[in-house]
Image 1 (cartoon, rainbow, N blue to C red):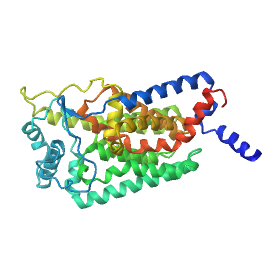
Image 2 (tube, rainbow, N blue to C red):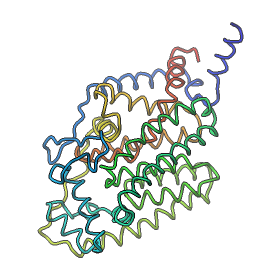
Image 3 (cartoon, one colour):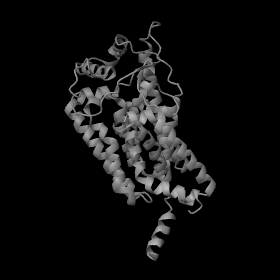
Length: 377
């Protein structure tokens, strides 16, 4: 019995247990915030809408191409990307037809950010569907391997290694659904998960390369890149911080070139896209994560609180990865509460895959927070 108590005391005092050393009142305040968020999450409405009207959320179950749907049954956005890939495959230049295609479907071309970068369409058209399937499988296994390694190397991560990598597999498994291979956010999210798993303070070259590819797919990756730069500056690793900032500068130049090619084709009659700053609040954060991940298979009264618990698990892990993950997922959560319409729910796929890992640390984080709130830490 004595040895068991000593083991418990050692676990409570583990240096990687962030909440174990908290004072009573900060712990109580956070515990109350978490409790309130869990209640609000359970009752917050989750919906995907198109132009203010309820819209069917495409099924994530199945492995058809796409799920046995005909083009007329396929989601309009997915069918649009199918068409873009088809035209590139026939030898057409992306910038010669993309504005025309968006106009034909009554999609806005103003502002120019409404027109995606061509990177994913080029890759898909060049490789073909079988190679994309192989690439998706390889990317999932690379994420699992990277997090197996990182969890084993980070303080306290080894004891949560098996569960953490299983949760990475669960969060990333959506990337194997070939119906959604045309979605930029799906690939960008898996690449962010891989870059995050590969990164180490002092060893960041591979993570930088993977993040650059993710950024080339979708500009929504930019906050992740800026966070990595900020974390490097916080550690006073100026070489790494400079590398991330240089990536931002190169991306800005590429984006300026992209926007200039779109701008010369715009005409005054082109519709302007609706405002993205819509202040959806908690539903924006929870809806984006739940509807763009396998959490959507659960009743939303259960799925939404799980998002809160994921963030709490990351916050409770006192390590380089835990700190970065906390800023990453809460930062994107705040962004989703402020920006993005209901039909932009798929933006959540940019961060959803590796966010699941936070649940592995919940059995440590939540009891420690409760003990600290009771003054028994």
